[in-house]
Image 1 (cartoon, rainbow, N blue to C red):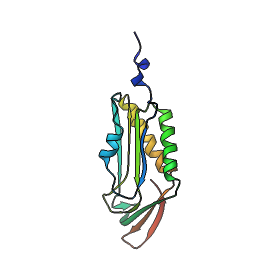
Image 2: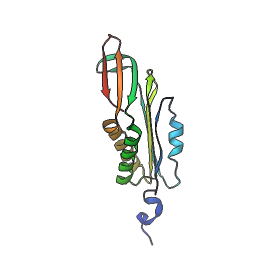
Image 3: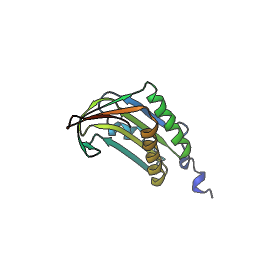
Image 4: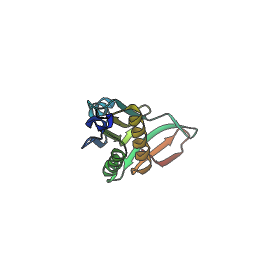
Amino acid sequence: MATTNDHPGEQAAQDPIKLIGIRDSALSPDEVFRAVGDDAAGGTALFVGTVRNHDGGADVEELGYSCHPSAEAEMRRIAEKVAAEFPVRALAAVHRVGDLRVGDLAVVVAVSCPHRGEAFEACRKLIDDLKHEVPIWKHQKFSDGTEEWVGAC
């Protein structure tokens, strides 16, 4: 009898990257979730990053994201790295640029894997690496009149 690891569904998919994008319009968690649907996936992890009303003890009044022209290619590179490290069945990531308001979605990522633990770990790695490596910058304006640029995703 074959072990569970011998089943094709336990392995990474041949082409797991289903959706990568930088958008200047509202993001949809439903779109990202649908993109990672896979019959062999027993676990899907979805992360939604929203604009909060504060940062570093100050009230955020306005916020805008901008990116380098290479940002989408960098997102794909990171997605490929995550897919190589985990048994990813499907992966998707989109980030918004432009002016956003408190409560708006800034980033949505999802990963499906054969098991929930792998999905959680892969999704965490994906969002953490996107935040640290993709050239996307956040410009925050605070209610006290100060502002700052932050390299973030």
